Length: 384
Image (cartoon, rainbow, N blue to C red; front, top):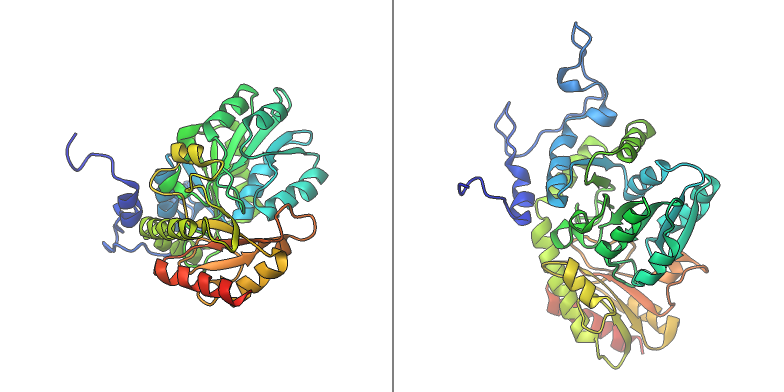
């Protein structure tokens, strides 16, 4: 194999965006194609097979190709949001199908499952993320059609053994979908551990600048189920706009340096506060004290991500006051941007949330790590 033929690293793939150059202009930055429709040939065929923009816009091509290469998939589709991508998978199911998913997961999707999913005739069981026996108990051959994983899981960052659960699911004839939003393909490639479909809220780390709403699905291989997902993508209308696609690709070109810096900062914060007298618990898979640390080491390479949670001594009142006193950490929902965010998660999710009231979720950005630690220490001191 020649030097130029060898497989590139994920950092190079993302930074170069696969090295594509516009043939018409030789531009290294891809053009946008705002056209919603494409001219038909006189023989009734379509140039390059493109008919209408929902599924055929050429602006999608490079962004999909980059993400597909990073995840090691066979095809990628972009959606208007992470929720739109996740819902497309659920819409590919039939009434009477059974889904197994984590008890602790992205709250909006869990709420959708229990509302719209149930009304569509789908049944759900929710299990302990890190308990293989619990997954085994609820994945039933001939009944379970979809197993949904999220690892690390929001907001307590539990770890699921993807390979072990995928083995159980495939033995039962079920499709495995993994929400890889937090780990990103820089740290975990779920397809290599047996996942059939990988989902991203591309709003988060893939874009990385808190200015694009987007989602994606990548399949390991073509299948009848994937074709149903693609039909939902093309006909459901929840596709990504061309300008948002262009911004997403621009964001992905800095993915490796952002994820590396955020992971490094999160690890420093986790270690600093792990035995802090004012902190009840630090939840971060990079710590040896984390229940899922060994599995995280096995399926995460290059870091443990930029997300962690702090449980604050003094209960909900202290936790809220602590987060009110932060200056660098902004009080806001979402995650994965270059700026650091802090959120009192249980008050966002409401009374039925399983999240402890003393928990604060931190999305650690790419600022100077010492400044971030100082901000948290100062906020803790002022919240007494």
